[in-house]
Length: 416
Image (cartoon, rainbow, N blue to C red):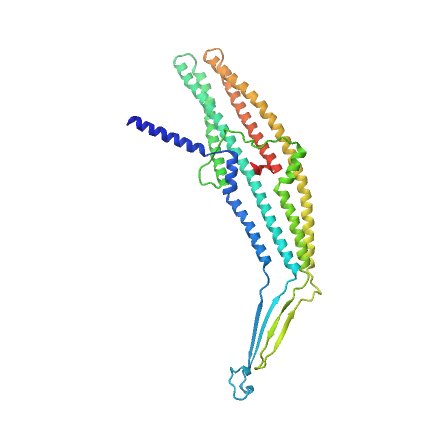
């Protein structure tokens, strides 16, 4: 039974570890969850449905209008002979059935504007998705950075903790003085304080990532694999061409121009009055009358001049914004590509320095325990190793951020 119990415990621990491992999110996993679950993004997607409803409204034709007017003779001295007050001879009734008749181009222009608005809403949604992807990626990288910092802090804390244990034994054996023990304990306490502070920052960053993912479950990031799933091999000109094709802001402003062009046609069609036509049935004191009804505005003063001018200015504004956006995208791509190349080289150089500092720490630790070097040299090697580790992961984090920034600038981030 003891062996069976131990086996069950081992199985449970293995399953627990497997489940916890499944909770580790790669960058691609986090972005996929955000696109599917983020509540703000879901809310923005409803704007597409709202725009589609406007198209339904634009397709509708005006309803017929039924009008009734009834006049009753109330003075009995005017009644015809042998009639009561409710007799049809004492009443005049007016029935009028009319309908507005839109010009064909007016209805078509309304439908065209609504269709362009749907395309605009879709592009605005894609732009929101693009921005959210960038924000989630940066937050994922922040959690990744703090997790790596926790790892090296824990390693540094473990190194000094084991050294303090050894130093205590050596003090008991009167091999070293108590001062050397204290000198070893000081950096250990410093690492302990940094560890607590970093743990708090890490938990806060994880909670922020969880909020952005709109996830009800606990989340954590994976540090096992590189995030560079999209290779950057192009030069600036090629990347700029990709950005002008892929950036959702470009498509949004193009849709805005298309909407403004359709709106100009719609406002011009609205300057023509819409006629209202119909028939009249008018029995007056039992004498029937049949007539025709027609009404139309006379465009002497108002011909929709203000709305037409406004639509033209809106188009001009959108065209200027498009030119500005093109310059902005060009600048962002060039800056992001230069930063990416620089940070890539920096990480490579820090990797070499990190390997050297690790070898120095291993050598000095071995030499100190053999009495071939001083405690000051060992602590200096320990501090140098920790600083190099921290600088290396900071550089790697900055490099990943530059990679994400470049993908954002080119619009390729949506493919992660």
